[in-house]
Image (tube, rainbow, N blue to C red; front, side, top):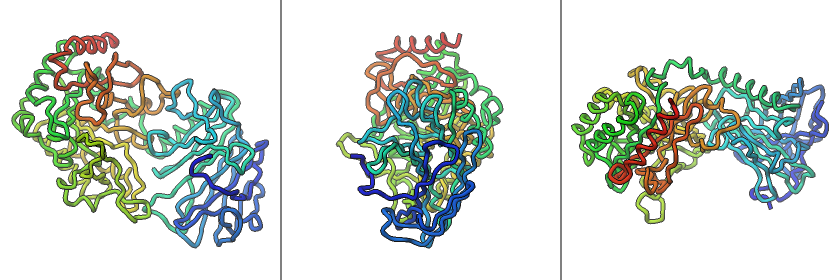
Length: 539
């Protein structure tokens, strides 16, 4: 049976959807204490206006105080819900349920803008479809059921906060049920909640589907100040012409050194015989010493050559025209390296406990480490710590860019909003160093206005249906986990082995080539072939 499903019929007060044959809808309200439906005896829906003057526990056995008000606007096949609720408790969010939608299949299912062409998501009895925003599986709250004709779903919000889309065939429903859940930010919870607009559009063709997505993009541009790539002011001119991200791995969490700074300098001299230096972004993970172990104390690692060795690397890169980009963590911290960690650690939405986000097995004992916590850059002291560490390095060594690891991570922290924290972090860095390229890892729609370039979590060998996100606004880079020639070592990353192939050349994507300890001693010809393919594709 479907996991995490109700084991009883919630007995919703289903309402007809005007102008949509066979579609019905219902509302659920979630507080910090329970979930509720509308009380049928106290609910009216006329002329597009919903008034519910009472709630009921799911299943209808008990009534509960509370009210729900809403409007459903209809036009051009579009149904737009604006729902608000007020209860005696603290409201977490609301759910819109729609039943009677087309049955999703393996050849005509659900898809998002970043779903590869020819792929669909379809629910089964044991595996419903669920997408979560903002996270890699739903990078903007828009989706489509069918290809055209089809039904699109869009949530129009000006605030980054949780949204979930769920499609299943519950035991209590004769048809598939579409659910759209919208939550309030944990820092703004109260007894009242006004949900962002939820839109359903019946599209007669693929052209209408694409039109609806373009309208969704327009709303994003307005809500999050997204600017087309060609008009961005936070992209140095050199960054618009990159051919290669050269990932020069430094020191692993265990202390194993892949490349010293002097070795990196020699590698740059070699690679620039095949790729012009000004078209190379040399990305430096593990430059600070033991990767992740040293976070967030950032300075050139002693085992790699220390400050003097780093200075020699910078001088070599500058002489070759190569642009250096050291790696920093937007969130990660070793508890022994940042004693103030508890003030910034992510908290559960109810503020009951610290939420641990990422705990790789670095030492290979087959268990996750417990020395790392994820911190929220929305917390002023941690944000200022990162700003100072970045600017100290840039002012001392004049590197051209910095990379903020895990910036695509989002959590509903009740003390500090994450997205405004990122925006303030990057804004302060660029106020101090306006010439600096600031890159991130992963992305969701609003973040594209903060980071002009991001390492991608998507498999770019399967390009998305609509590449407007992110390519209309930003560019993507090959990821840290992309393997090196030879066995496919992922270097300092926890990924182990991931074989490398030919460089991908797709719209707006810059391929990455990893360099570990044996890359140039044993696999120089493979490096040359990769580099020549990169330049050849450009030519």
